[in-house]
Length: 200
Image (tube, rainbow, N blue to C red; front, side):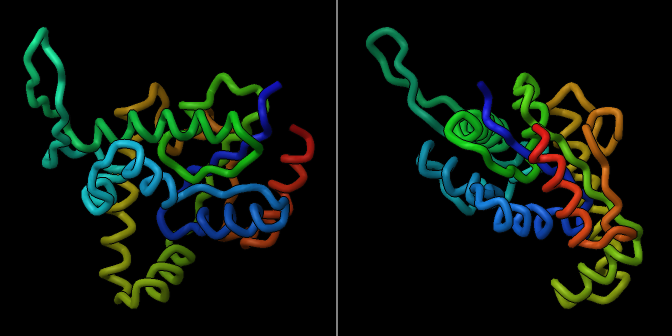
């Protein structure tokens, strides 16, 4: 039987990460977000900072070099760093979901684990005022700077998700549940997800 897994996609500034961490603490199950990059770095020996730079972005500026054996010769091969990261994270996400119940943030995990019948895929969104308030406070930015950061980050996430999966980022038809953090707040979102988790 598959483990219960909650995967959370989120708009930037909507509080999806905080909702996931709070739910993890309440349910006492592992939570994976930035740790996925560290795990990928260790598994591949690729530089953590380089992987972090391409995380959840579809860009081809950085290349991962590795040695391949062709006959009796060794050759250096290269693939885009973001391609390597997605492949590594997909392996890691499957491994983690196979080990125990958990919560995973972003990175196309809902698509990667789509065959897990006990997975709950969630999309967290919020109105622009809520997101601006969060991003301004967290990053100490002006409203104009925060708005630009929100638009840029959501565009990057959308392009990344749409490229690596067969789904469309933010399309509620692709998720089991979509929650408005601006209207419900962090606490009620966590309450709803806790109830849904118990029913998986």
